[in-house]
Picture (cartoon, rainbow, N blue to C red):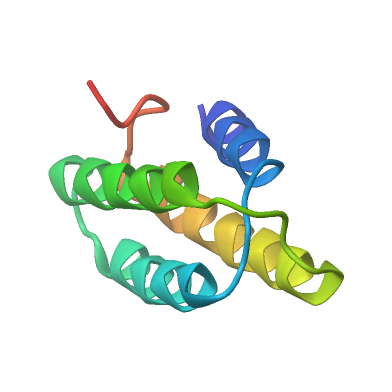
Length: 89
C-alpha cells in the first residue's frame, strides 16, 4: 500500500508546479507526520491531492527536487498512519 500511495503521489507531481504550492505542501507534510490515525492521514492526503491538482505550471528543477523530497517524506508518514491510496474515498 505504501508503494501505491507514493506512486499515486508521484504521478500527480509530474504535472505539478512550484511556488506557493511548495510551501503549502511542506506544511501539509508536517501535518501528515503528526497524524496518529487513518482518519487524520486520509484528511491530509486529500488536502495534498487538492494542492497538487490545483497546480497550473511546470515546476523548476529546484522546485521539482524539493517537491519530490517533501512528497516522499509525506508519503512515508501517511503510510505509517494508514492513509488510503485514494484520498477521495
